[in-house]
Length: 228
Image (cartoon, rainbow, N blue to C red; front, side):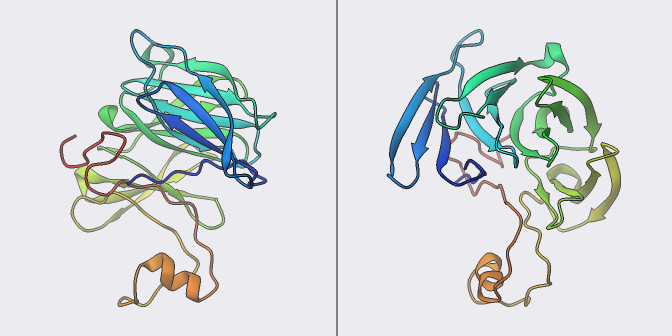
């Protein structure tokens, strides 16, 4: 199972990258039907869009493709996404983009596991700003509730890199258990023995968590976290 934030800011529309269909489907959430479907142009073979993140402001959609492509889409008209930029390693993109997060000022942070860093993308400008070395393979990340830090589990070093989104650098690292993969940030420390999931425990307290992205086992998108 894969989870990503794919809804437009007002919740009216959701976006589904189709790995095997080379399309992005726009869903009308209230009507529970397809609003439109756009084709994704190939890149030396099938486009293979597989994950996507909507910017908090609602103007951009950032999409990861296999094996080494990232696209930026203008969704200011939420029912009619338009590709405005395409990035590859030739443009400075790291290798193996898997998931992404977007800051409030439309800066994307793309987790590029094969190059063991995070690629920082200016969505409005459609360009790579820099890459942040996290010292190992990172598959995903999550914002703290105040969106002032980005927590990135680094699977190959048994640690979590804490990124400062303004400085675009690692501010500190946290040693954790073996092979961390996904993360969720909350405002309180949950009971270590909650009933059900941590998210369910926080929900019972009426507390929201930040967006979470993770894969469990072999994903529908074709990624096996244990197989690379």
